[in-house]
Length: 152
Image (cartoon, rainbow, N blue to C red; front, side, top):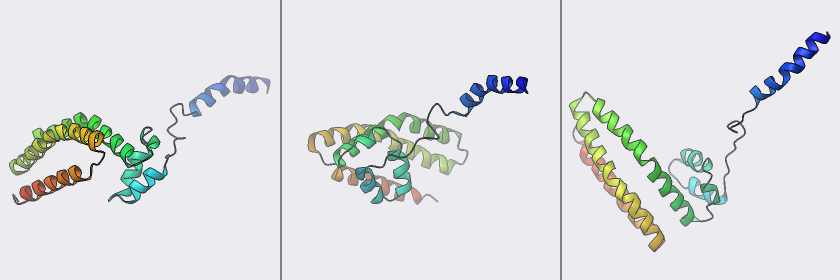
């Protein structure tokens, strides 16, 4: 009996350490501020919005539309290289020539977006309103998708 208790006491710290989540993944809870809630509730895909903004430490400090837009631009710009690499990999591995042509056009359009991210930051900081340039970019993307969809 005494031996089993001493073994238990010896292994107890290891059991405790193996059960603790040191990175806080299991303990992490979305921090949904009123600004994030308002933005996500009015978005086309609220769940995705909550996942992205609720898990972003900087977005949680955004107190108005301006702050939130700036955070989103920085997030998109920082993910640009990773997304570019993925699109390039898909394009270079595609065997269907029609799809490959579409992917190349998408890749070209995405390369052009890099300067748009920089311009959006400048526009936001100088004018404080992103609605017109964002709508223009969305219309540009929509028209390119429609033009490319006639290839099938």
